[in-house]
Length: 185
Image 1 (cartoon, rainbow, N blue to C red):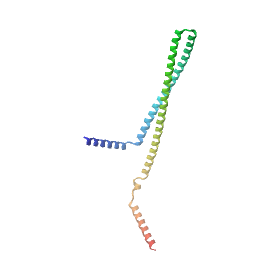
Image 2: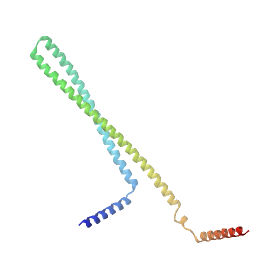
Image 3: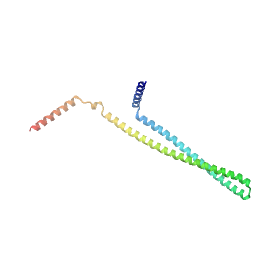
Image 4: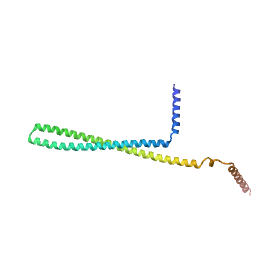
């Protein structure tokens, strides 16, 4: 059974290799660019959504702080009037507002960390995309240069004719004769 698996793997690898040769590297790079652009767009949307949620949390935190200040004034008034039962109720609301304020601050901090992380990832993605675009441009330049060279050296210009062979042979004989006569003199 082991030999059949090995042969199967070799055939699969060979088929994959042939498919790689058939695929155009230019098209593969363009597809990678499209996928990277899609990921970048999604990440930008996520960051925009995070900014919106962060603004909402900050607004909510502002309202909670205002409410906390009002409750603090009410508590001071209750204590001043000596109404302990009402002061207890107001104190409970004040403590709830403080907990809510801490919770909102924690949420803001967490969200700010996520935004920073996602912005860093976005920057890395944009750098990779720039790199891929540069490689594609380089590849396209090399490919166009190779096509120009191959068209300038078409089959006719690389074929040596009988006349060219005859002329080259006569020149070589003439040079050899000149060297013999020059060395004997």
